[in-house]
Length: 115
Image 1 (cartoon, one colour):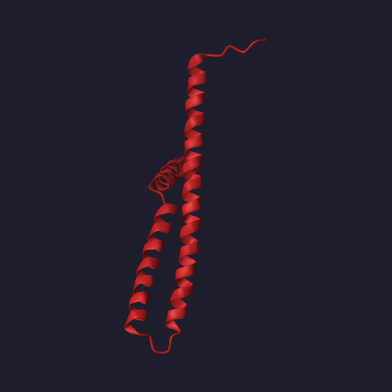
Image 2 (tube, rainbow, N blue to C red; image 1 turned 180 degrees about the horizontal axis):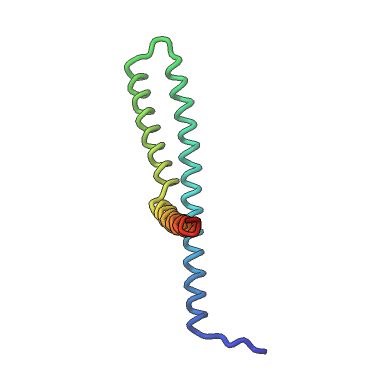
């Protein structure tokens, strides 16, 4: 039995496939950037601990320590913003609304059946 292929279905499939490939590329790029940021964060933390162990830090070392602290804060913010997305939160929110509402409705039904 031959399959009837609709050109619209093929077009939709191609567009969906391209969207998935694009999302995968974006995810790979974001993952690579997160890995690089984590490596840089580790290196900065090591340098920071080396500088903090100095017995008599010079003004230059204090400036470098301050710069490292600022870079670490920036990296932490960048990492958090890359790992946290509002679209993911939006999906979780609507799932909570959907299932929470369903729970309320089931609770009302059970209460009315029990009384």
